Length: 75
Image (cartoon, rainbow, N blue to C red):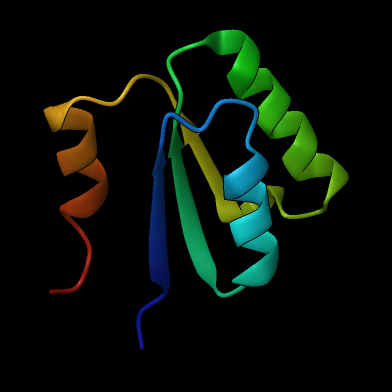
């Protein structure tokens, strides 16, 4: 069985992404946030909540970056 995937576009400081990672520990969470400072805050929040391994924090979202994340998902 493949791992579930959640995508958060415009994740800001990571409140929802980290919360979802805590509630869905068997899921891989992909976040997109254009602002480096907010990505920093997301990483920090993930480390403090011990779920950093479930979070893949990326920069700005566009059709290509979204395709890169979804291309390997099971249909």
